Image: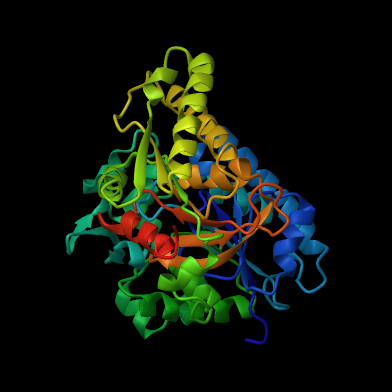
Length: 452
């Protein structure tokens, strides 16, 4: 291979960069902003679409808009080959990054990408995410729970009210999600023995956007598979990925991150305490929150979102005033305020109502972010949707530079020195479903060791 392709990741929430570093995260997708990513030195960049938080029609619309602008940006970037000509001049590799527990708008997003940026020879489902304990063996996707591989359809994630499913065997998952359009028997399976023996010959034979599912037990498995993919791409094959984060590590092949995770506190501003925003309400987040609130110099501030159900607008303004009063008091006392949404799971008459309520809650949280102390030392955002909104709405960013991981699966970015309110602010993007019970407390401790 003479030229490696530029890897373009359409990320349906902002945590897909959790295994790479030193690249750009783009919160906008106009042609000019996309060119920033295409011309950046890093081999990979992310476009944060946040589509997992949106209804299907809106997810499709945004994906189509990104693809349309990408085609224009790519075709007018001299160092890249036009999309229609494959990877012979460097080219691009498109990844639809989604959840390692199989939640998200599949096949809606890959269908739109294929129609706008195709044709592709194949699209691959690669949900393995090793740092989060997600492996795929014999085409069955597992979540490691206390060291035991548990088929993901037996976990809480499969019961998600928006993205629920019934199968951990990926060909059956594909058949279920495509409503039979792609039959399970027609799905190509790249098993561990195939990957370890070499897959290039099979990859070269794929055509007509063949659906394929890929095993992975270790990073070495996906590294091996990625090498074959890149070789096939250099010979003109065009592939699309629907994946979690670990295949990105393999495709980008970056050196170790410059700053070790335990030394990330050097980015904390002025030795000041930080702020933690917790929007995710999955069981794992609640466990982590409980441990965090036991840490020295933290102060819990609950946002009772049930108050928004009957009188959203008025209660939102009242809650905002109350929360920011408590935040300022904690900050002035040298403590880190931990702002978290009430934990009870609310029920709604339909999915649309649930999503709309989520928009209202996020709007309140972002108003809180915009009112945070301008001299806070750091910000930790817990939850994928919350983190996306923190970057794009709360902080109003167009792009941010990814520093790396402060903990396995948890990325840290830094705002520009030109930011009008929070220059050079380190921000941790902490997914809702990553880490053990102590993980959130560990991140807090790493950032707080030189504060106060």
